[in-house]
Image (cartoon, rainbow over all chains, first blue to last red; front, side):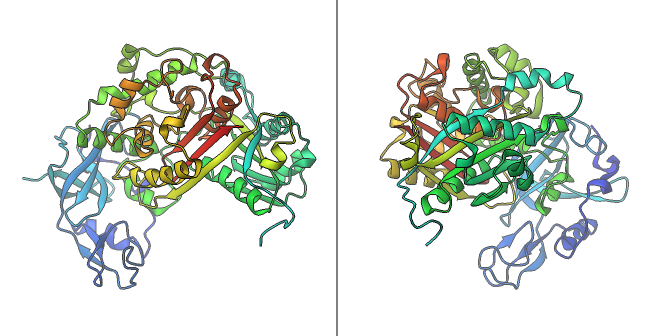
Length: 139
Length: 389
């Protein structure tokens, strides 16, 4: 079980940066959870789109989320699909942000993962400088 | 408006069916000196299905292909159908087992084609497919993959963990599904796995993505399935058992994740309402149900979405009504399905619906089977009702 800061070779599975996703990935480096908000209808969305997925406006903007969430679900991987970066066992969570969207993120396998428990976003710089979003039980 | 104005099609039927011997292919896997050729496998089952229908290759005027036969020109050239009226390839995903039959039906009902061959061919085992780890086809996969989140099994595992929490269920009850699939497969000589599975074996087995055990996961194996679909009018001339596709409907759920917050309920229940209304049936009229199980929890969502029981009550329903052939009024996944028979991404489940309606299932035949239902929870969901005529 390794700490996120020790995780190796993450850049190899990082996606290519482009206009649509750059604000999110760069936001992690600034310890911000960037998601989109529509100034017309007020809804939040993630993953990003060039348009509001509810009212279809093209005025969609990026904002920093509160980082508050609840645990929607979790699994523990025992199979190693990505050997270099994710030796087993490791945990992934679906976090339901206070703003609404559902996100996948890290959570250490040894932490208590209680359904609907309050979580707070964390930001980890890994060994090669790539950042990872995580969630931990809120204090 | 479309196609042949002289063609009369009041409905569609599956008149030809063939598939590979999954058990034999699986046993031979280690001794192969080269990967199986998906085109050869597909063309072989296509020819068998056409012969099974009492037709010849010349009768085929529509071709719908799925998965590892992406070059439809090559496939049709090899089969000897140089000028199909409709022809296309669908991606290698289970959701296409709904679409493939619906597109065939749409072509026939509109007069775009009359006798449509559907062929699914999969040589993934030969090529080392793992259904996880590789980059996704879209950006949405990236947001999960950086966290180690990969594979549809993990997505279904997430839904099951949540489902069990929301409805306060005992996760151990999931074992019933794999055990039932194994039991049904003991009566299927083509199944890859033909032995019973005990609860002890299930619980001792390794987790793939906890809470899912390896027995909750579908197989990875080579194989191919082919159907011939035609109009009811033509089907009745063929002297073969007529298995009519009496109702079929589809819904998409276009969210960023395979995992759905309502466990596919909204769309499945809309499909169920449409097809049960069209067929003038309720779940009580169904004699056997085949539910897409890339991972066993989707069986639960399928039963609930189609109204076999209330939401959250699928385990209770199965305990009260059973799912094993010979022990249930409406057995579930009678061939052993994706975890035991073969993982042909829904196509072997459709084959089982047709076989049950033809009364060709031997020891696993559901007595007097008239109506077989196929349920597909996925990003594109489907329900097909087949009736023996």
